[in-house]
Image (cartoon, rainbow, N blue to C red; front, side, top):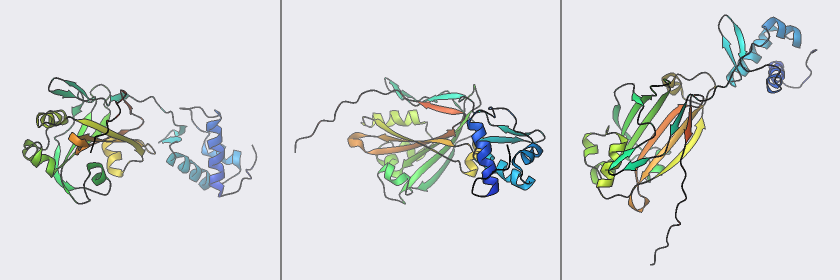
Amino acid sequence: MGEIQRPGALYQQVAAEIRSGIAAGEYKPGSPLPSETQLIERYKVSRPTVRKAIAALRAEGLIEVIHGKGSYVRAIPAPAVTIERTITRTGKTFQTGHHTWEQAETPTVYRTTTTATTGPLLGLDEGEALFGVDRLLTDPKTGTRAMHRVLIPFATAADEAEQLGEAPDTEPEQIYAALTAAGHNLTWQETVSARMPLPDERSTLDIPDATPIVHTARVTLGNDDRPLLLEELRASADRAQLVYRITADRPRQLRAV
């Protein structure tokens, strides 16, 4: 292939050619890219241009650079673990899909307030008081990590389950049982999104460069669909996948007034 003629910055042109080669299967997942010298010869560009093109593709997650070996087309592995998101109940006992995961460290308990994101999920204004509990979980079989956060409104702790004020780090399954004992018929609503991790999330979850995370936000709803609790789960998208059991809801009955 001769000198490239596409418009745009020269390194972007080189990156586009390599990207096309990956998409076309010219460069297979897990295989090395040509050396810098070979790329310079192929595209008739300078070494800094090649290095900027490689850096751009690395930022996109298409390649990985192995020190002392060179650049490789990134192989996208199958997720190491499937997280069952269904909640099951047997009598007064609840169970979540990650109940077998181990806590890598002692939970962190703190006081915080609702944000522009968490407030609407909990039906609260921004700045309302919450208990926060952060846990780092690990799957014992694969070593996959997940960050789990519970946000408990002060009103829930005071009015619905008083023990939460003394022990906010009560396990979620036990919180469900306490809320049920308080007379609530619980349901759950969950939102799933994907985004690039923050620096602390990348280091805590041990995420490779240019890898997104899956982020779930689960709201526990009590009687009259009142939000009582918010849980967030974050995991690397290349290590974990989520699975749900879906059942058909009965249509809600209109109430006479």
